[in-house]
Image 1: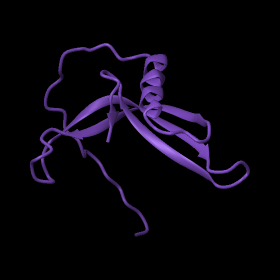
Image 2: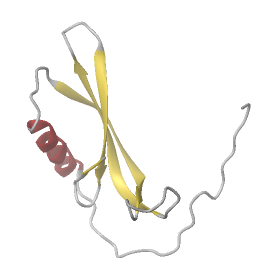
Image 3: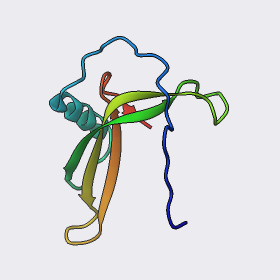
Image 4: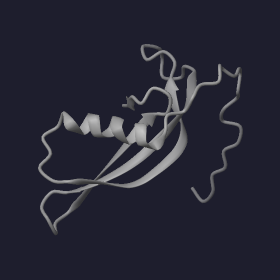
Length: 104
């Protein structure tokens, strides 16, 4: 493929109620809570936080081509070393910007 253009992938059908977006501090607390359930051998470092809209399937039990909701969220890149000076691993977490839940 030499070039690929994609236009009008999403069509807005309705706007929902206006809801308050969680702050970056509240989102980081949610991420910290999710890591507190894991056995952490090494420290983790937040490298990047980006605001974005995340597609979430309306009905998870429906067919693959069902409708999606675009929800506001935060994408967070977290790095960790397996052994100091060795390979660095990356986790990318998508967090719902309204509820603070991690989106699988």
